[in-house]
Length: 173
Image 1 (cartoon, rainbow, N blue to C red):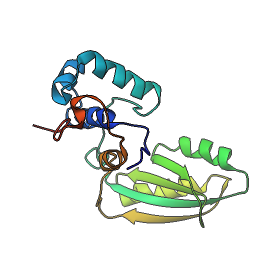
Image 2 (image 1 turned 30 degrees about the vertical axis):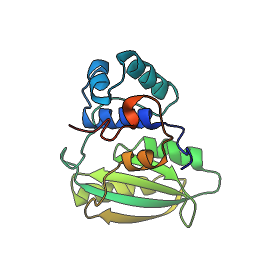
Image 3 (image 1 turned 120 degrees about the vertical axis):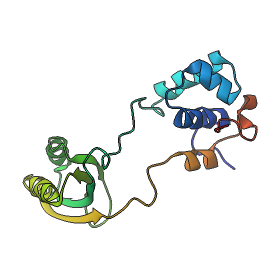
């Protein structure tokens, strides 16, 4: 298998350990992965410096936080208006994420609201942007596969150094 991710098995084991034990410090991660604490610290610093790890904050379930109505909205925007639409989308708190896309639409947004009425207002707000020519929305009924990275990283990781390549390393015990 080729190294597509730029990560080796130890990097993936550390990321898995962080996922399984999000409050663990370097010493606990060292114990879980079976590598030296200094190695853990250096690897985590490298992962952060390279942008692979983007934060250590809590993962928030917006549904549990009272914002259980979610939708995906495709926006068709005026030619060359990507910066304008970015600014307008950033100003709408209900926009969880937005991606420039290929295909019929130009931007795909994920939005959340507390009710269908609130969702309707979010859709109105999106369409108020002068950059938006047309929008199409699809309401999410349930989450079938939550956001995840572990299977992809484990599949593409290069064989690594240390004991992390051993079966079970970085996994819950």
